[in-house]
Length: 316
Image (cartoon, rainbow, N blue to C red; front, top):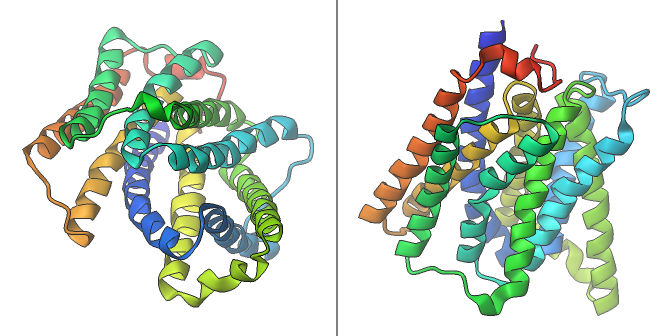
């Protein structure tokens, strides 16, 4: 039973990488029709409304009584609130390439935080594999001519903080998986995300006298499709699956899968935006995959279930 749970967790991790990889494409489409805060509002509106249906009909049971709700609220503050807010304002002051490079360091930050708060142990070879995965992403961006400009320091700092926010989410979600079901955590996070971004968006439109523009994006079928994908698939589904994954495997092992999304977004760009794939893309992709496989394959032989049980999270 436990082995089946691990296989499902790894399958979900790969699925999430594919979903996130395509989310960059849909985000580009959505931002043509709406600003960042409006896009986030509709994104989380879609996820919250869709999940509210099974909750309202009792198909999904939700109960927060007697559970550490304060820590769950802190989780929501890290993701989606902290992560997306920092990302939006960071990308306004830095380039998307810089964002991609900095985001690739999320597994490293997660590994450090998980070792401190969850006492997760990684071997030297696993650490090297994590860095290999990161190097693969950085290699692709650098070979494309991208680099980090110190003149964009404010944006760089904000984007690096997104790594901390996602790493903090991964670690805290793993510790909370023994108290909440994936549905309970996901519903809380989607609801808080929707309410917060709705308030911020409406406040911004009111202050600038553009409140009538709030509904304008809904005139576009492309925007609605993008919002549904970003909200239901890229937010709700990945949150549900990530919470399940973190109840089965260490946060440091899960986080390295995020770098696979770079490969997926590269393929999506080639298929739908006619972006060119070169030799360095293949080399970088090989390094990323080798790092992901190496990290998790070596994790199977560093202490087995005993090592996992010491994390204090449920495994079944």
